[in-house]
Each structure stands twice: as C-alpha cells, then as structure tokens.
Length: 117
Image (cartoon, rainbow, N blue to C red; front, side):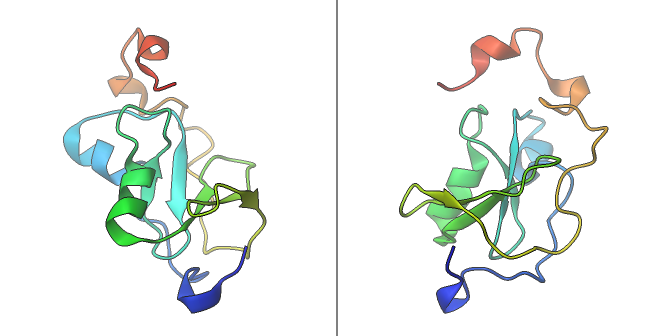
C-alpha cells in the first residue's frame, strides 16, 4: 500500500474498541475495520451499518486495516485490492475477549440472517 499524499498516518490512534457509529446508535457489528488515515473504527460491509465504507465515502480516506485480532491486512477502497502496510499505532485490534459479532449484549439472536451479503 502506498502512503502517498498522507493517506496513511501510522501515529493516529483508533477511535475505540468498537464501531463508533454503532456504539452511538445502539447497533451491532460483525467485523471491525480501522481507517489508516485517522483511526476511525467502523464496521465491515457484512455488518448492517457498513460504517467503514460510509467513512470512506464521507472523508475519501482510501485505506483501512482489519481491526480483528491477528489480522494485519489493508484494503484500498479505490482499487478494491488488499495488501500490506505500515504498523499502525496501538492497539491494532479490538480486545481479544470482545466477541465477533459484538457487542454481545446488542447482537440479535438471528444475526446471521441480518448480515449483508
């Protein structure tokens, strides 16, 4: 991944342990993604809110990194490609004991039927 034009800021901390918009609205997520430019944590496109993509559409920040434990891949919204990138500021994932989907107390019993395909 290229970090041209300051599209990746390795020093930007994540905005929190979960999707910012889902937390504000009482929603839930399947997997989390972190903006490599500003640290915004949003939910993946399989999640009902698709907030990581919404953040890209709103800001133009093209690179996200998985915010799942043990995953380090980056995604480029412009090309649709995945790749490697620089180490980002800690923490690099949500807490390992935080379930996926999450948060546990807000995930509906029929969550698999509610995922975007």
